[in-house]
Image 1 (cartoon, helix red, strand yellow):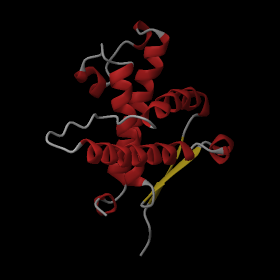
Image 2: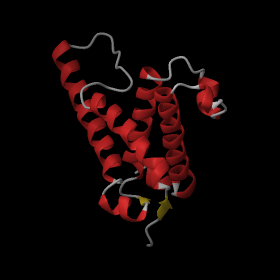
Image 3: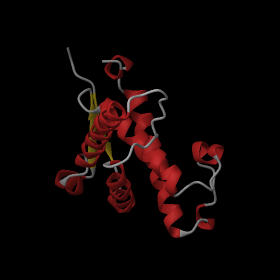
Image 4: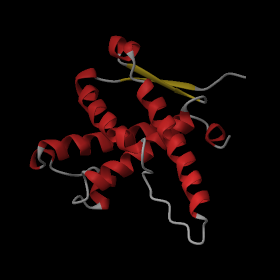
Amino acid sequence: MKRKRIEVKLALPVVAPLLDVIKEMADGLGQQLAAPLAVADLDAEFHDAWVGELVGAQSADVQRLLALFDDEFFRDGVVAFDEDNAECILRACAAIRLRLREHHLKSVADETLETGEVDMMALEEPKRRAFMCYLFLATVQELIIQHLDASILDS
């Protein structure tokens, strides 16, 4: 059976600054969940252990995303998605997008975030980079979902 794989050529001058934003968000995701866990009637020790495991998994997913942008990427500008990394890359993109929304894009309406229809020049530089990163990660998620078989994501 042939394994599905997609390779995407990215423009280094565009993506490189976005990687700085991703790395900044990754630091916080190593200590805190992107989506806070609110579970009533849970033993505090069990809750802490569970959250710890979730944070560890989240951090591993984000590190796997960052690993796509290695020396080879900076040499040829290509990243590859396949059945080995699709699911964790989707989760990492979602976690970073949630964190961007919470920390840099609170003042941007949800509809604007999802449609991407905004006057980029009207945004201050840090918010512009965060918004561009948000859209970039959404595009990565869409590529994976559209081009890789859904059965890969259900495994």
